[in-house]
Amino acid sequence: MTNVSVGMPAVDFVVGLVRSKKEIESIDFVSYPVAPSFEVRLSKNDELHRESEIESLLAVIRKSKAPLWAILASYYLQTRGVEGLAREALLHDNTGATTWTIPRRELSVEGLEEIVDDLGSAYALSASSKVTLSDGSIGHLPMIDFRCEPSDDNLRAVTDVARAIGERSGAFLNSGNSYHYYGLNVLGERDWVAFLGKCLLFAPLVDVRYIGHRLIDGHCRLRLSRIGAKPVPTVVEVFFADGGSGE
Image 1 (cartoon, rainbow, N blue to C red):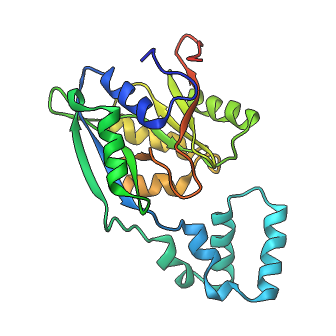
Image 2 (spheres, rainbow, N blue to C red):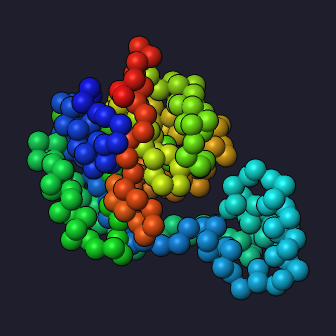
């Protein structure tokens, strides 16, 4: 894929990526209802609304660089045990999700934008890593959801992570709160699992809960559309095996 450029919206990028891979027969997309994250659900739990406990928790947060969800989860385990945490931690709800399988030759920016428009603001559309190849086998596009604020330093860090786990070419998109990564090569299913395993070794820079949910589903997915205040993800960096850039 050589026509990718900085500032390209996620839909345009994914369409260009898939269309450039002649071995791909079709790709899945998933629409899903917008729902609060694990850390939001924990932070709004009534049991945490005791003033003294809130102050204690804020003190821990100020001293730590760990993700908020990890701090909240640790706090729950220490103060209430696993029972108070398990319901929220294990929630994996695909109710209302719809999978769209689109042949590569029929894939278009206009078609995906029409789906997004029809979904409305209560739903989001994501690209799935899962692709069906021309020989009938299943492959995956490498995808990572990072957990770090967008900045020049963090962009260099996530690029170093991608290279360290063996990615030879890929693109980073600013998701509004962090970065989404797409590898530009298709992986077999065993290599995809190994890829996710390597990603886990870079937690908390990599979102470990994202990987857990994606392993349960059997595919990764990354958001293409706007969610509330979060904008449409856009390309901010591209790298290739020769060390070049797509800018």
